[in-house]
Length: 380
Image 1 (spheres, rainbow, N blue to C red):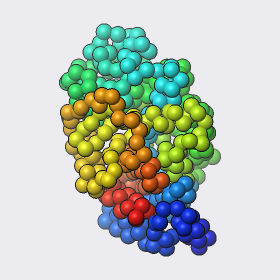
Image 2 (spheres, rainbow, N blue to C red):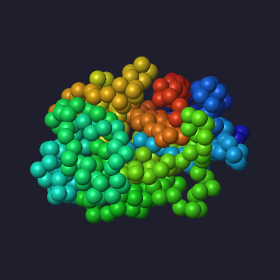
Image 3 (spheres, rainbow, N blue to C red):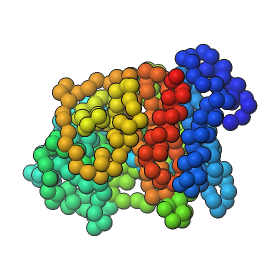
């Protein structure tokens, strides 16, 4: 961080809830991030924090081992499942325009699915992973086209009735985004890149990466430290396909913390993603974001972001009525691809948030711990 940036942060800190000074914050972030890089051999990590609408950036390591290009706040990382929060925003965007309803069934938009077991599920079920046990990933045999999609969903046999269990699932969330796009009669990438992102002030977030942005695209590194980037499969854009920078993602976090200045439709769409619909243990599942009432412990957050939550069948309780959006809530989402790891969290009541992007898929528990440590320094 430059001397000027530290001075600016220190001045900002004096004007809001007391937080650590800029130099102390640098130390807090260093102590949270550097051990992770060493222990898990992570090439590069970018961190952004926001306090009372003011961002600060921290960059470590390289975006490419081959070129030695340093990580900056403009480096593009694969967001993995953090992409699902953008899909949820798109679906909420359709909801507030009355083009989509959470009570709709798939056959309203895909008539060929009428009468199939999955047609008993609703848009809400697909958006909250409660449609009946769709798996984490599509089988390798499923082709990336409409015929492959229809064949898979049309023949799927649920393991439970809709709304009974939560099974974290790309096919489920992918269908959620697909139905939203059909309701808007538009390509989902067009809705995101042409209608929503510009209104959020996000200029370096992409589903379709232009050639001009390739210079900023980091290489990811897999468990064998081989350079990798994600491929494409059915619904990849809706579930893991967004690439972004900490400069853009902290704007996204700020918009979620305080959407009051946004275009009215986008504001209502953002607010809609903060409503909670199902409880799973200590976690409340909303659209895209997972929620925890404040104060929240590190153990609770790590449990909510554990393998048990992402790989196992978990019973759920429907919240009736749904839990209204609450500022005094920790909202978060993790994401990963084979070569990247991400974590985003924010607490609107404290006006604080964090983005951690890395070009290696290191353990989620470590991401949550680092973010928890840093955010607690910001709010104290």
